[in-house]
Structures are given as C-alpha cells and as structure tokens.
Length: 210
Ligand SMILES: Cc1cc2nc3c(=O)[nH]c(=O)nc-3n(C[C@H](O)[C@H](O)[C@H](O)COP(=O)(O)O)c2cc1C
Picture (cartoon, rainbow, N blue to C red):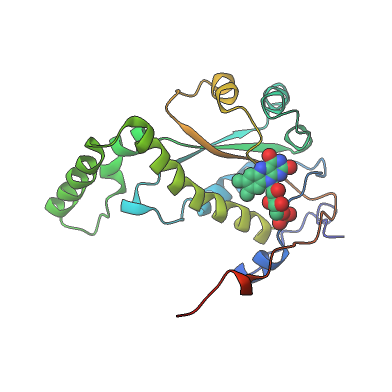
C-alpha cells in the first residue's frame, strides 16, 4: 500500500522516482494537509518556467465542505472532489499577468531593460484577441500543472487532476471573472488506495532521433 497517511511522514522522492510512481488517486485519508504544506507545494509549482516569465497561473485551495460540494456538482459529481481534504482550482489569468508583468521582470536586469521587456511583451498581445491571449496563458499554466502533480507525489501527497467540469459553473461558484481559463481541478490528499499502477504507451513509439 502506498498510503503514508498513518505515519503522517512526508516521503521526499527525487523527480525521476516521483515520475515513475505517480498515478491518479481518488480516495484519500481524512487527514488534513497542513496549510503550510499546501502553500509550499504551490510556491514550488510556481517555479515552473513560462514564456516571458509571465506566470499566469493562479490557485484557489478549496477546503470548505459546502464549496467542495458545489465544485463536485460542477464537476460531473466526481466524488474525489468531496473525498479529498482539498481541491485546488487552478486557473490562468493573462489579463492580470500582463498587468503584473513588471513584478515578473528579473530584478538583476537594468531598469531600462526591464521596462523595454514589459513594453515588448504587452505589445505582442495587442494584435491578439482576448480569447487568444487567455488560451496562451492557459498553455503556460499547464506547465505549472505538471510541476504540481509531480511535486505532490514527491511529498507523499496524492492527486487527481480533472478536466471533467463545467468551467462556467466553477467560475460562478468562485466569483472568477469570465475571461480566465481553468486548466484543471486537482483534488489532493494523503492516499487511501493503491490506484492503478502507471501505464503508458511505449515511449519508444513516441520518440525518434534524427
Ligand atoms: C488534465 C487532466 C484532466 C483529467 N481529467 C480527469 C477527470 O475529469 N476525471 C478523472 O477521473 N480523471 C481525469 N484525469 C486523469 C487521467 O485519466 C489520468 O491521468 C490518466 O489516465 C493517466 O493515469 P494516471 O494519472 O493514474 O497515471 C485527468 C488527467 C489530466 C492530466
């Protein structure tokens, strides 16, 4: 059994080990995840790289039982949303990321270079529609989603990523603006089942060298 809920110990695995072991888990122990652990996990997920360092990902950690029930209703009644001590709504907001771009510029760069970078990046979005802009942001946020799933595994936490939900219902429930995108809901907790062992089509058939 992979469950670490009983010991409460955090097993820190290396990245390769976490990639080998990770699988979706949909049943969790009742043990709460300490808030600091979730904060640290999301801080590390935010170490994901993004084009122009835009970092358009945002997270809402839903722990309130009534809110989780509302989320589950918006997510085809997927029960892991309720069973997990927390379900993370991961969304991306490029409109906000463009406003906050100066914060994203590297402090070691000279001021003129930072200002030029902000201008150049904002200009590159002037020709794009709001839809294109937000889709671009969601693509970046998916990089952080991968980080989040792997990091959780490395810390002994189990996850269930989900795309089976009605985004408009989730936005209404949480009061999110209509332009944002939601790359995934991620239920998270200490595992209380084995889950299916990871299965993938052979990487040999997906890779070629030239
Ligand atoms: C973006 C994304 C969306 C997914 N949506 C759902 C979902 O709505 N419901 C569900 O039960 N599993 C969902 N899954 C889980 C996948 O079915 C699962 O990751 C895949 O079968 C591989 O299995 P593993 O995660 O156990 O390795 C989703 C996975 C990802 C990455």
